[in-house]
Image (cartoon, rainbow, N blue to C red; front, side, top):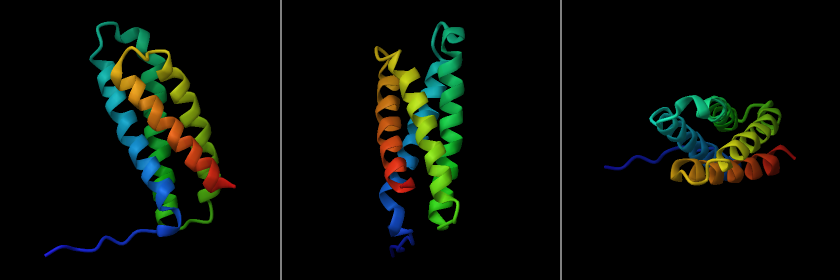
Length: 115
């Protein structure tokens, strides 16, 4: 027996982008911690953690149709862009490359939503 999941369809594309970005950033930070020269990855790890948190928050706000969703998404877009920029410095690492892509998509969707 399958259950129908209730979703806020109004923002679903942006919610999905935030959730994908959250997962990518979480994986990227964990992968960075396993790199041989972890100290060189400090900023990347920190931005991944910040991006993870703001993406989760944005997803939650949109899911409950909060009146503050647009503000949160505007901030999320900025942090996602910063995280993507940092990850792009390590494009030779697959996890950073994929994270940067997820961050760029999320930033774009959050900007659309925040308008």
